[in-house]
Image (cartoon, rainbow, N blue to C red):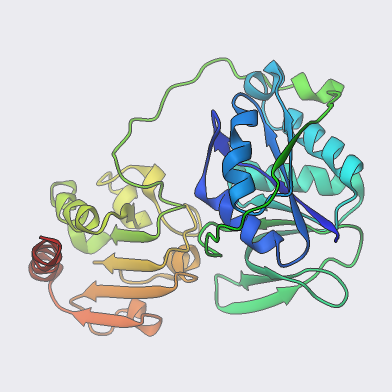
Amino acid sequence: MAEVLVLVDHVDGAVRKPTLELLTLARRIGDPVAVALGAGAGATAGVLGEHGAVRVLTADAPEFAEYLVVPKVDALQAAFEAVSPVAVLVVSSAEGKEVAARLALRVGSGVITDATDVEAGEQGPVATQAAFAASYTTRSRVSRGVPVITVKPNSAPVEPVAAAGAVESLPVSFGAAATGTKVTSRTPRESTGRPELTEAAIVVSGGRGVNGAENFPLIEALADSLGAAVGASRAAVDAGWYPHTSQVGQTGKSVSPQLYIASGISGAIQHRAGMQTSKTIVAINKDAEAPIFELVDYGVVGDLFAVVPQLTEEINTRKG
């Protein structure tokens, strides 16, 4: 069967969930061949094999940690030339999209970003995307070369399927551009104990209606009761109520969780662009005419300061 390259997103050998989702999608097209780079790459093989990777190509070198993006592109290009895949799948993060674009340019192929689904087609893989601020859904395929596709987290289920997961060393030659941008320092991000926003299965967001940083603990308490990530609208982060790293929207992060709860968010098109592909959307807003109610699955017209604590208490009671 034809092979599909999957670039592995991992931290010191711990494979992140979006990569396992890519393996599910890759199996629809062919046999997944995982490409794991950097420290701990070899340790990824067990998990990748348990989720359908027939082979795991690994490479480790100081360049992957000391320089930005290009060393990974060099390695992925080496894998591309060694495997001759029918498609390349990459997690749709900021780095992932840059890697995908650079690879597509090098190999003369088309690139599709932010796909929410991938399936086999008669003339090659077909990707589903949300377009025009998620107002439309499109189905696209690359008409030139091997498709390079980045896929949003939470776009597919994680489905364990045993495969060989045979580890093979990937020879990589780094080009002159690989050392062009050096990492001079790193500051570890302070952990909140909550899931990563773009990967979370449940996201609880607060907006202008939260009315101050001192009230965001209401949003956090609901999120914690659900094991969810916390998001915020642009209005909330611009007001300094919550960190910009938690902004959901066209100029923030794009999320696609199984459940998205919007509290005190009116539903401006910029915010909708970042969360409209969520599987189930719930809105809590005291304004019955708020635009957010146009796209929700469930809407609660009420004061969030009354509704959110009651919802949190009910969830905790049922868990207890």
